[in-house]
Each structure stands twice: as C-alpha cells, then as structure tokens.
View 1 (cartoon, rainbow, N blue to C red):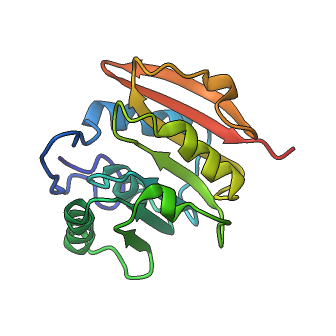
View 2: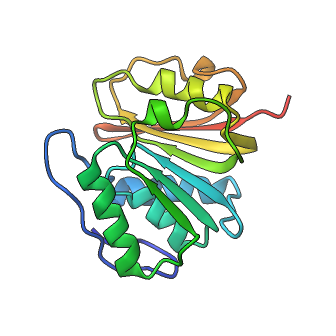
Length: 189
C-alpha cells in the first residue's frame, strides 16, 4: 500500500493480515480525501485522530498532507506496532503523533484534553461499534467545533446517518463497493 499525496507520496507502508483486517483501498482513500478537499479541509495545523486505526493508512495520509498531529488508537498491539514502524520508516517527526494500543471505548472515555479537527472512525465490521463510538466522541468533546468526523463502515450497515449522534450534521453518505463512507460536521449550536 502506498501513500497517495503529500510529502510521503508514493512511499509504501506495511499493513497487517488477519481476520477482520481490511486496510482502506487506494480507491476508497482517494475518494475520501477528495470529499474532504471539496469541503475545504486544510491540513496545516490540523489535529487528527484515527480510531480503530488498523494499518493507520488514513492518519498517515493526513500527516503526509500536512496535519500537525495525529493520534492513532488501535486495540491490537501488533497493528499498533506496525503503525509505529511505518511512522519511523516515513520519518514522521516526534511530537507529531501518538500511537495508543488501547481499546477505543476506554481511550475515548471522559472529556477530551484538546479537541480534534478531523476524526476517522473505522470500526470492525459486524460489531455495531459505530453508534457508541460516535456517542463517546460527541459527549466527550473530542471533535472540535466545525470539525469533521469520517466513518468507514460496511455498506449494508443499518444506520440513520442524519440522526446518528447529537451535534453532528451529515455532509455525505457514499458507497464504494462494500465500503460506505459517512462524513459529519460538528454543529456549533
């Protein structure tokens, strides 16, 4: 797998294998980052969080495009180790990232010390983890005012995206094969 754009463009990243492990394809990542660009996302100075990070491809792509900081949350210690190795191999600056080998529910418990302008959520398919994760993010103030939250889920997921969580306004709901991309923006009201 390769980084699509930015300072790490064309560089390979190592991904893992195993049940339920499904790194975002280049097609899905391109579509997702095009949707973000169309909505005016500027990466310079942006704080990003990649929840259920897996290979970390979404957070790595954001760092490549100029994000100031990315926090990766991944329960699997092996996958978190791969993310760390990829960050080291890419030469990502210390202080521009944190890799937490932690359960997302525990990592997002309580109030955020500082909000994030862009949050990626890519829960394992078939586990119904998106609704409680959205609730923790909104209740804990993890998403900055006007911040964007992106969910990558299975296309057959039954979810009323327009009322998925209080304080989030649906921006987009698109399917790419078996993958569904949802974009919400935190409303300031």
